[in-house]
Image 1 (cartoon, rainbow, N blue to C red):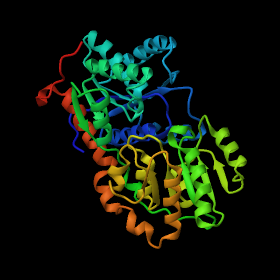
Image 2: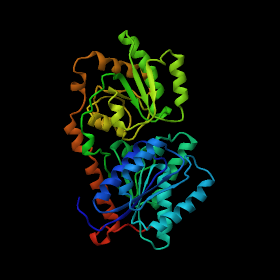
Image 3: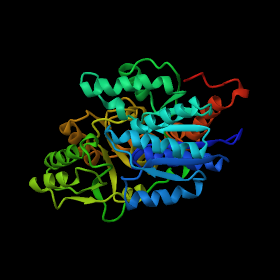
Length: 389
């Protein structure tokens, strides 16, 4: 990665969990190693011991530090106090680049960056949605409000970064054709993630790894698991690995259906440890952008069964037999049964690791993001930032 002017880069996002957190961690590490100063600003009220351990991993790369302030998921009057506190903290860090991730992170980065610009402080303001507000429907009142706010914030945005074609196309369809600079830069995983992870001797048939909330489809996983047992005519085993607001409800669902002893539940853990517990990874999401769990699973040599949502078909292939109709537990069960009953299903269905690595690499992702940062920051390169309020 070619170093031009060393940059001061601050990433803003709400919750330090899931794909956004993974995305930011990779950028932090790659850009720090390239000689830039990097920091993170995120919520102080979410995450647990597992997320703390992930922060410990990247702390050596955070020369601008880790700043945590209370950031609520929903819009509330307390946001005004949060904005003021955030602005003061960001101003003290003197960033060249403010990159907001997710809806709340995007608001904080762009409004704080615009306030700095009013005070004649030059800073690039970028936004990556990571799905987020783009999951809203234009037919609902809340969706209309959120999507109109996205449109309004383009006036305070120097570049939009889309992590897959699906996200770019959805933005154009729901928000409108962007009126600012855009760039398509795929999510990617590191070289160390392209190592096969063998399953343990006590491995289960299927695992679900992710947030325990309905958007990600844990209830569909439970329903499809029961139907897969009926299709195959024998008992199976599974694990649900993760944390979230609906954990107890899913546990009750399993107990009510007599599955409590065949589907176990474990808290969030490092993904490599989770992957050792099964060969077959189920991703039953109702909506996604470009989920890291699919890339990580492929890198580890796992068999992926996933909903046809978001950018997943861009990874597995638009016609992949591993894709199922979103929200349809019957279709999910059909493919889950096929993976266990069809010889060489993995070899016939999964993309080759080399093909995945060629497109979905964190080194490529970080290089392209950094190139965009320099285009926005470096007027001498003939790519000065557009005028903004």
